Every structure is written in structure tokens, then in C-alpha cells.
Image (cartoon, rainbow, N blue to C red):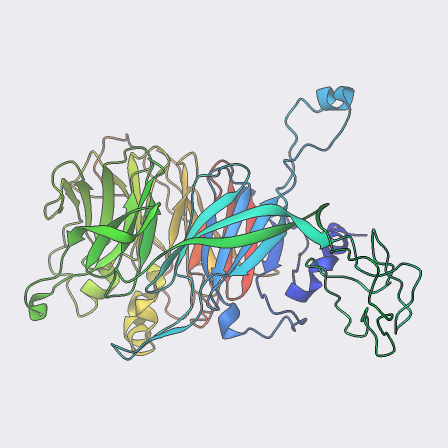
Length: 531
């Protein structure tokens, strides 16, 4: 029996959600695919080829420990996965001492729970339909064994608490145990002997199991004694997701980002023109800290595209714009951060301006490195790594799909040029990754002297035929010379010589905070790779 079949047997109980695992195959340049998980949450089994619009994954996020993974979809649902290979196997002390050395094995995640985070709404004042799609998910600090996370759609942010609770059941019935009722079930003073399964609240899932049948009648004078049912807490547990707070009515435009502060008490939410600061404990009040809306909307030249708190300094945050610039602001300077502390933007090359220049320069996502020293940004054609101590230009630039430049007109006609790809960094800061078309994603090494550039496909055959990339000159961290990797120049094919498919795109991905593991979404399927 192959490994994939063993994994399928272990997770067959979740077949209603079409969880699918594929064969563990070796990949080129250290990356190996170990699992493929379908995030379709319909209760009936679905064909693999059928992809429902509401099942398409729209957000992915690891928690700080990397032991939990959350995904959100266009149907407003959040699915949580839990890592199982790091748990205590329950072996003896001698066996544990033998396992004291690190063991090379792939990470394993299993389905934990799911819940409906958002529902479709309609704003009657603005005649605006608000879809339930999850735009972003962010994990918060855990407490008392419970998981906390923020999820948002276009208008409303919700704070969720997920924890295990013991199931309560009815253990005492108000019937004489010697009497049988209409359907033959006998009631007991301590429990019910009806063979039908009972629900957590004491009810029966089978309507035919009725304790008071049609032929049951009370004796003359009534029952000699009245015994009330007793609700007891059993040893069985179930995961319960509860919405603790709702942060609404603070954004006139669509929310594109939420980010937790390192203080564990506040977070920000950003739309096209404003950034608001919230306290997790207060849902009816927020503070506007950035406002780029001009007095006359005709003077609007750029919008906010992404915002992120600094990972260690609670007073610093960065936000990007549609003009390709990143602004670093300090909350200690003023209540309304009209001015920035630093501005990061790349000077435009003379004579290179075209109709598509501003469109492809728009930054769709930014991420801080774990130590807060670098900022990773993704525009349509490239990903750039910025040093916050060097605002003269990007520290490094990586071409994602330069071969698409001759096809910008076609991409503009089918609106693909407006796709918003995400980016991520490894926990050690030595690699960066981002998605592309045909369900491809690219991994680049950003350490000094590194020439690593790997292209993988989120499919049954993840290995792509590689092309030679130019060697990268050695350079120090203080150098300001930009490094550019160029792909193939042949339109209609990608850098590996494969045909392009603009209908399949890999927009969302996340890197494990401590290991070389990447989770990425292709339509309604979740793929995971490890090195």
C-alpha cells in the first residue's frame, strides 16, 4: 500500500468534505509535495473536476507556532487544520530518549473544524450587495487552550474563538423503567435504552423514537412521583466556534487588509482610502490613523492596496499604494499619520513609461520579514525586497513572469492584469515565494550570492522543466545595486516553456513561520510543499 493510500484511510471519515491526499513525490531543488487538501465544504461528495465558485479559497494563514492553518473561501467559510506529526506520540521514556535526535519527516495536517464566518448582506442605504467572501484571516494570541482569529469580508471584521467544550446530555427521564411506551423503548431513571442515537441536547435524530407513543396514557390520578430530567456533562468533547465581537460600519470602501499588532491588544484594518486602528476588546469604536481621501475625489491619484504592522515594534506599520510606493509610519508622531517616516519607491527608468506602467506598478501585497528588517512587496510583474534602513531603492528584485510583458494588451482586455497576487517570506528570511498563472508559484533565494529560483506547479505533477537562470553576483547587504532575474521572452509560454493558462492562477500562499513549508491555494484545493 502506497503512502497516499494510508493517508486516505486515516482521513476517510471526512469524505463528505472531499479531503484528498496525493502521492509524496520528490521535487527539484529540495521542495517536495506531501499533501493536497480540497477545501470544499459541501456535505455531499463532489467530483474532483467540479469546482464551485463559493468553494474557491480566498485566504490562507498559518498561526505563529505553525501548528494550525486557516483557510477562508468565497462562501464565507473558515476551515481550520491542525498539525499532528509534532504531538507527543505517547511512547516510553526509553523510546523518547532514542528519538532525541532530529528526525527528517514531512509535516502532517488534519482537518480540525470549520464554521460559517460571514453571510451575504445587502446595504439598503447604498443599494450595495456585500458578498460573503473571506478577504483576510489573521491569528490572534491563544489563551486557555482556545484559538482566536480575525476574519473579514469587504465590510465587516469578526473576532472568533474556537475551543473544545464538553457535550451535555440528559441522563434521567421522567418515566417508570418497568413501563414500555408506544415504540417499545424503555425509559430508565439513569439513562434511556432506546437504541436510536441521541443528539447532544437530549433529542433523538430519529423522529420515530418517541417516548410518549400514541398508545401511552397517564394512570388515573397521575404519576405517583415527578422526576425531572437531569442534564450532565459527558466526557465527549466537540469544537465550538463562537463569534466574540463584530467590528462593523467603519469602512466606506472594501477592506483589503487586516493586521495584528505585536502588543496583542490592537489591530488595523485598511480599505482603499483609510486605515483604522481597533482595540480587540472594543467593537463600537475605532480610530482613523491614515486618510488619503482628497477633498475633491477628482484629485485622487492613488489608493491604499495593503497594510501591515511591524512584527516587533507596536508603534510602526507600513502600507502600500497603487503607485508602487511603500510608506513606513510611526504612530508616536501624531494621532493622524498624514506624513510618513520613510518612503520606499523605485525611480522610473527614463523612456520606459507606457499605458500599463502604473497598472503593473500597483503593489498587491506586502509582508514584513520575521525580524522586521525587510519588507517584501508584490506588484504584477515582480516581487521586491526592501531594506527599511535603505530607502533609495529595493534591495533585490525578482522577475516573476517577465514573459507576459508582450501580452499586457491581452491581459488588460480580459482583466487579468488586475489580479492581486500575494507574497510570503520564509521564517529565516532566506527565501521568498509568490504565485503566477497556470497554478505556478516561484521560490527565490534572497541570501547574498544565492541563485536559487524554483518554479513549481500546484497539481499532480508539480515539477516544471527548469531553464537556466543567470548567475547572481555576490554582494553585501549594504549594496544598493538591484538584482534582476529574467525569464523567457517568448509570449504564450512561461519561463519553463509550458503553455499559459490565465484562467488558473495561484493568488494565495503562506509560508510556515519556522520551517520550509508552503501552503498555497489553487481554486478550491489546498496544496502543501516542504523542503
